Length: 585
Picture 1 (cartoon, helix red, strand yellow):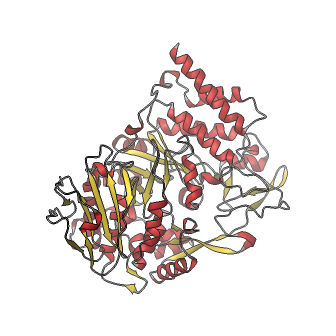
Picture 2: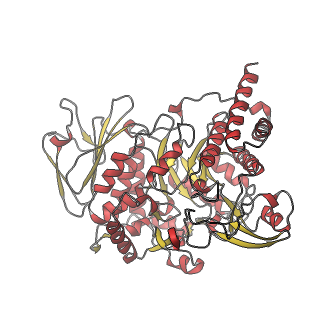
Picture 3: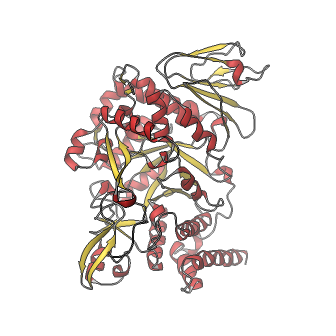
């Protein structure tokens, strides 16, 4: 009877979500359909009850971001090669893996999904995904805003056949669409000739990536089925790709609309009732104040990307000026219980510039763009108000982005890169490391020339045997970066003060230094994480950071004892210190 009461309560909550989005539908019936789709086997239903938020993550949680086919070996399915690389070279140093879209696709390196329920034959099979999920906490993309124009659903749209004929958002090309926020520079509507006549399909990201029409509740139900299937195959973390654009409404910006937030709340309600511990991450590359709204009232995303971090961190290290990075860490509110940030320096996409809006003066942005281009990077554009084009993201290998400063390349590339990673690892939230950062991959110009897409510069394919040889040779750049970074990751995992929800306070340090204070939730450990973001030596007065007298203090990274807590400490160019009152282990 208790289970029946729980189910009744769940149905009521789902119906309330649905009524906010589909007021003209029979929402009680829709809620029943959702429950039956999400739990086809009733024995698995609602076993989890309420999991304490403290069990969602801790300081040991770190993610690796990779495509399923990034690492290749002749005669072996790429997903098997990836699994072999993870087990042989990373082990449990990194416990979560985000495999970017591994489905059949027609464009955008996987984000133009043809079939959501199949694994791309070129990568492997569901059994390969499940094997990785057995060893690592698996994160996968729910490409929820758009699908491929080559999919069965869209072919049904073109033929005016059910169900696909009603799955895509169309608009009159004469409608006033001037308010729509665009992440790209191509036209918003793509014309198609269908059996029902000429139709203009909303295409936020490309002419091949056609947007779904979530005003049709059947589209939502399709994605409920997809989520349930992914859970069965081992996915435990869901990245909602481009979700900010999900709901469209003529005469509005068609981004961050209330209906979008309500659908995320519905998905959160479902996942919070599942037997497995499931996590939602929203991918919303937008200005920070908008991004923060996706936490909702602790009832939307568990985790949001800290999209402002990559451009502001990059700026700090290129200029030696941490002012704007400090403003970010001071202004970001502490995540509430059950929520946190996903921190990263690089991903399969570029370094986004929309988060710099209102956070970085245009003159500073222009200097950064010029420097990145001088390092071989590219700049992708988007269409702004009035049809003007504006820089949208910087496309470059993050290791190459750290090859110098505004003054040009220098000898500090590895140390500067490690400074960026050390800052990211110390911040409140869960760290995520892109595989090409871990491997210090250079810019992929051949890939850009082959695809014609700027993002390909940071999406290179890696030969398994070749990278293994490089990692085995301590004299190579790849081995030095890989070893130093994994060592830092391993050290970070042992510090309770680096729990994703541990206290964070930005230190008031002299120019050229960036620092935060972290304190464990039990208040037993404090860490002062301080980085020199310049190519010059910097001296800090330890008295200024108020180390508690009577405690013993260590720099966790060097292992040195801090004997004089009132003295000065000299930091080499790009050096990081993690001063802790708990001895290194």
